[in-house]
Amino acid sequence: MQSLEEFNSHYVTYRKLASIRALRPSPTADQDPDRPIVEPRTAYPLLPAADFRSDAIATQSLFAAKSR
Image 1 (cartoon, helix red, strand yellow):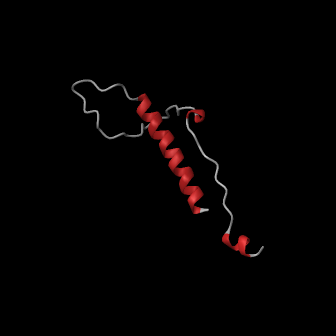
Image 2: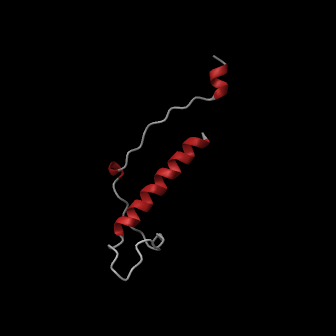
Image 3: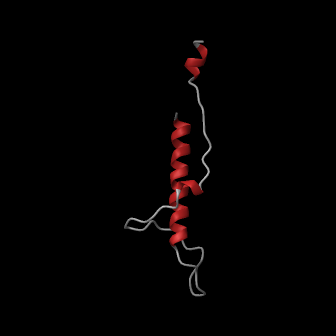
């Protein structure tokens, strides 16, 4: 179960980072394009979930498998 929770948190983090990066203006000559990404203090729109691929995962408890 922990792996599934980690997978979901990575998906959410990736979607947030991609959305923030999409909001940033293109760097000009006097800006550093490698500056860290900082989450805005106010609400911001997330990119649509349909733009991200999420694979299905099926797991089975080890104890359930042994009891069969």
